[in-house]
Image (cartoon, rainbow, N blue to C red; front, top):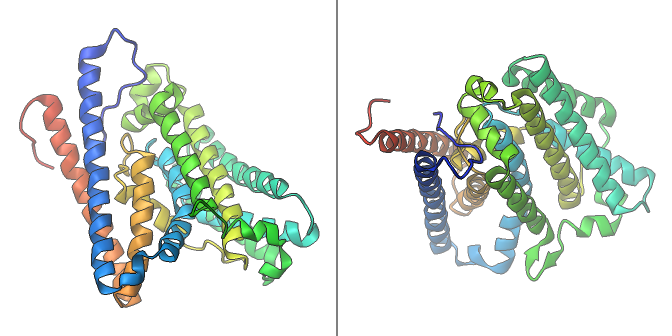
Length: 349
């Protein structure tokens, strides 16, 4: 679904643009409200089964579990709204997490900020490789990031050579970041919220962010209107890579035990979180707020199904059904939105 999206419009355009913005805003709100309702219903059902599910420790565990997925989903949203996808984020996370572990094994008394800079830098470098191949060489993102998924994972396996880094190999001050709370809220969750707010402001209020929607809606029209399409797509992949690097640092602090399989397969959860959160897989529509809610919903589903004693097989089936339902709802909202913009009744799918 490609939804028309206006750029940072000058004050003199307004009637049509305002109407579209209003309708798009209502569509986003409808999607995000639906996720909130589903989340509340899920929490209610699970708590009815086990009253300890909403205890303070359980909520903190849920937030910790969702934090890394939220960070990855924010980066993925920046890419997907340009009508692309980044399948390499799980491998970038694993590579960065292992690099951070090796860094502390070599320099056990190093400053934590140095580890953060290394993680962000490595993630950014991986994102730049993806962005350069896609934006400059004009190779489809699905093909490129599927290839780099295996390349980055292969580098990780080659570097690790079967080695595992344990919590005892890393400084306690670094590991405490993964468990420390501030006013009862995990520090990692606060980091995720800060990144979420920053990304939400950029995508909504800055021209460079709004141009990503225009590119996803119609790249040819965006190019004809003067938008630097290749540069914006390149930047989106660079941001996705940098956030995957940040997620790798958070992963190392959260789990402490790292090997070459860290983050294996998480890229599918990331794409699912974005889609469930209302980010159109064909670009041009969606928000980081919805993607974050999608990540929180998927994390809660995983915890709830275990409490409800659902077998792992059915957990995967339910996750798949949820994604299909989200895509169906997204299509329905797109038809209703298109109908509203035309002022008529919706036509076929």
